[in-house]
Structures are given as C-alpha cells and as structure tokens.
Image (cartoon, rainbow, N blue to C red):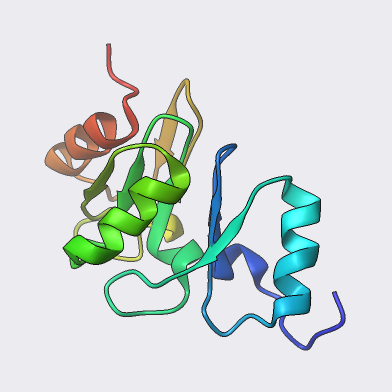
Length: 130
C-alpha cells in the first residue's frame, strides 16, 4: 500500500463474504484491498466511528460489534458480510470488541477480563456454542 496508514486491521472488518472499510480509505486502496481479499469492500461506520476493524469481530457465522451500533449500520454489516450482527462488549465492558476478541467459525477467544454474560453474548453472536 502506498500510504502512511499502517493499521489496516483497525480499518477493515471482513469475512469470506465481504468487507466493511474505514470511510477515509482512498479508492485506489479499496481496489487493492478487494483484490487481496477477493471480496467487495463497502465503506461504513460502527457506532458513528470510522475504525470498523477495532469496533467488531466478524466470522463466517456472525459479528459481535460495538454495543452502540445503529440499526442502519447493522443493516449494512448484515448485507455486506451476509451474517447476523449483535452488539456487545468484552473485557468487563470494553466496547472496542476486536481489542479483546478473535474468532472463526469453530471457536472464539476472548480477553481474560471478559465476564460470563459477555462470553454468553459472544457465543450467541458468533454461533460458537453447541
């Protein structure tokens, strides 16, 4: 990438079906991201904030997002990522979900301060409970 930006993990939220990008990304960067990931990138925000990659964790089964996600933002994420979206927190109330949560279609790993109710919500959101 020919840019000063370096924290693309904070700027992109993606799964195998699509990607949401920071609205401040340039068109040439979006094209490179689409080519690299093999999915369409749609620009968007979560909770009115641009750094979507730090505000949510996405898998091919679900998304756990910042608890203040709006209905409109949730609809965009659902349409682009093609999975259900839920709001919640990690690590005893931290709304920047991706700072304390990673996952795939099989399992999720959360920060050590994550409470039982938060773990329940994560399991439901990412569909990793049996």
